[in-house]
Structures are given as structure tokens and as C-alpha cells.
Image 1 (cartoon, helix red, strand yellow):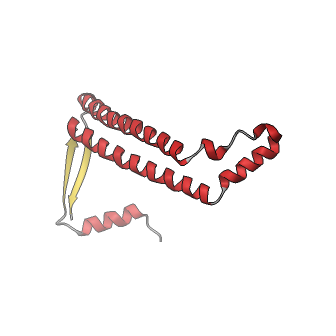
Image 2 (image 1 turned 90 degrees about the vertical axis):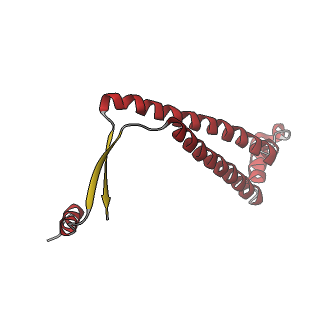
Image 3 (image 1 turned 135 degrees about the horizontal axis):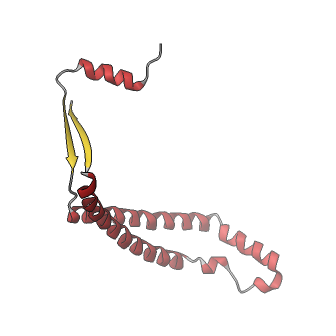
Length: 138
């Protein structure tokens, strides 16, 4: 006696006769709008990447993970590993500098990809006719 979700939705839509449905075809994506939107998304991702990297580095430093790995490397390598320190290599300045460079490059790449996707969609509309979208007024 159990009915699927699709059947329940069909019964519900059959009861509401005053719901108006419109089917529209998306045939154009504005280049500058997609460029601005992809830039804002990339900027938000870059800020999130910088904050998460800072938080992870802070947690690893306060839990002394770098010190533990340094002592493990010294025990495994013997006296030869005295000059190598993971804590010095992965200092906060080095890690954050690398993260900022990656975030800037990521921002450029995501922005360009957003623009390229808009151009490719606009070119593909000539072949496919665009996306058919359905809207309803509840």
C-alpha cells in the first residue's frame, strides 16, 4: 500500500488546479554576468582556503604534531637528520605564503573557467537549442 514520492506529488499537483506552470528555454548566458559570478565564487573559495589552512596549521602546531614528527625522523635517521626539521620547513609564513599563491592562481583559473563555460554553453545552444526549464507558481 506504499506509494512512491512521485505518485504523492502527482496527486498533490492534481488537487491544486490554480497552479500555473511555465516551461522556458535557456538560450543565452551573459558572458559578463558569468565572469562576475565565477570571480565572486572563486574569491570566496580563496578566502575559505586561506582560513582553513591557517586553522589546520594552528591545530597541528598546538598539538605538537610537527615536534613529534621531527623526533621520529631523528630517531629513524640517527644523527644525520639533525639539520632537517619539519617544523622549520612548514613554518606558518611558508605555509601561508604558499596558500596565498595557490589561492590567487585558483581565483584566476576558476574565473576563466566560468567565462569559458558560458562561451561554450552559448555555442552549444546553436546545436542543442538550450535547456528546457520548468517553473511553477505556487
